[in-house]
Length: 54
Image 1 (cartoon, rainbow, N blue to C red):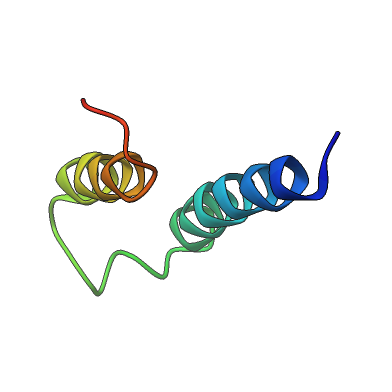
Image 2 (image 1 turned 120 degrees about the vertical axis):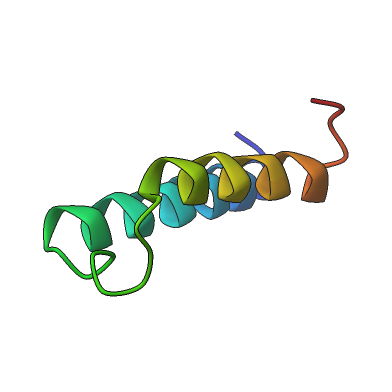
């Protein structure tokens, strides 16, 4: 895989892994009551940052 592809894959994986880790360890409970909305918004922003229409 070309370096740009690896970097993109790591960016996406790292972002999603971070959110899931925060959720698993309960760190999002004190940040928001609508974790599902937070995940949807984070995914939408990630998709937009990649230049993909959602």
